[in-house]
Image (cartoon, rainbow, N blue to C red):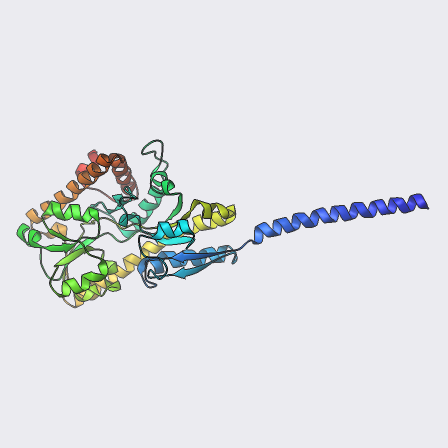
Length: 372
């Protein structure tokens, strides 16, 4: 009897040990699977901006849904929490977890290669540009010291980035000044939004004026500037559709690119399934977000024409004007390449990579650029 009793005690202890082990494993698995993340997001964009509505907001919604609520977001738009160009510091200091977007084109000293998307193209669209930008971010082509574009630009800052929808291609719009002659082009005072556009303005002989976009409406109203390099689908965000009366389109003067960004440390805190959800959401929405730009642009052009707005293809301009604008596009590529090469950056390599990716995605570049 005593022997039987001892056996029963031993059996009971064995069961307790086994059950205890299973409970620990279950709790460990539960802790890993159910860990939640509430992420602070900063954006310089307004809540009705095309990029926010078409890409960043849907991305967050999709991540929340696909993660079953394990990831949630607290958003601060319109520079409410962090001023534009201060995003990298805010990420590293832990003020925010995600920048949506990071705007590398505004910081060429920190991100010298990112301006490549602003180079003028002979054929493009928001969809072509967005898919090309995604391929650029994901490219495994080594540009310098065995590093890819993303490694050189963002890895050096310890940032993890995901591609976002790119802007519509830039056009030239004025309050009424028409480019009927070379002299008309060269007397124009145009607001330039980037270093690339400053180079282009110089090449075509136009007068370049640098100012923030939100100051442009007042400047055009006062006659201080004649117009701007801008993409049509962004007009309504600033009320420019009331002022722009003449636009040269089909010149495709580059795309403004932006990114979803976080620190490597933040990225590495996410389990693999959350990382995959974020990557898949970005890949899916990059092209879809571009469709919003196309729809907005079509609507704006239709409304503008009804109130006297004129849209002229570069192909229909005076041959001398056309040649000036096209030659300026070609020379802008070479100046950009030289600028980067002199800085010790891989200017030639990044230009060739962007050229090849754009063409692969159905776009095109100035003919001489194909011979780089």
